Length: 301
Image (cartoon, rainbow, N blue to C red; front, side):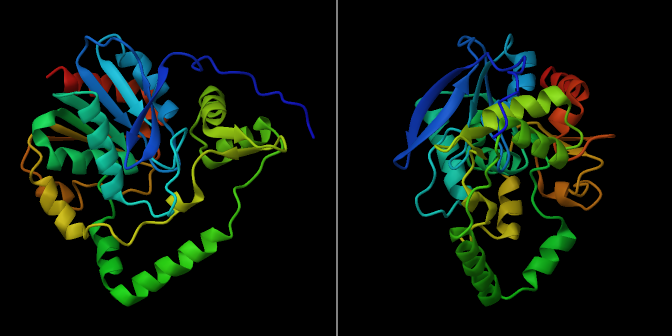
């Protein structure tokens, strides 16, 4: 086995780690201090972890009290025993965290799955959210949703059963060293700088008993649960959001433009939209300075 070479990143220190409980799961979050500041919640995306927000948090920590959770099945949070991860369960965990922390008038920023959770939470509890930023969190485009709707419910359930069965026999991938995991991170996310990829790898992997390394997330988070709400019902929920909302997208991402495809029409709140050139799905990584400047402008209004 090769010797360990991956050095700690410059953003490896900062927040304190804490635990809370939701549906008997032991869940983890980090707190960036400044408890007297207005609250800000940062929600990561699927197969990610709370420390992916570190660069963003460093910019806003002096002005806000920032907390960033690891979603169930991700990071240092406990895995769901059934392997059945639903968006409603994620939303419940967020509701429990903010209730237990007694946080109100929260600024919420979410990415991808975290953006979808942020949108749904804000729709359900609009009185608790002051401003909302969602990075590519609006789900499938109208054309993709239409294709999905053509598949019968029987076929969708059978596909879900097949996917879950396949995952039951899929072991977490093992890397001989963190360097190998780091290289995989760079290959999968070409926009990442070396420092970003190193940092995300250090906080996103665990060392196994045999000395190898595996990603922290539960493989079952790869499967979308069959118990989710229909897309049309979710769109109706977005009409209940009352706070100013900023939607963001990377122009090199797979996600479609929500303004061009009409998905923003479901909102009744003040809406802003920002796309970023030379950015993929992880806008807050790929164009950090531009992202921070745009969010700062939005929050300052």
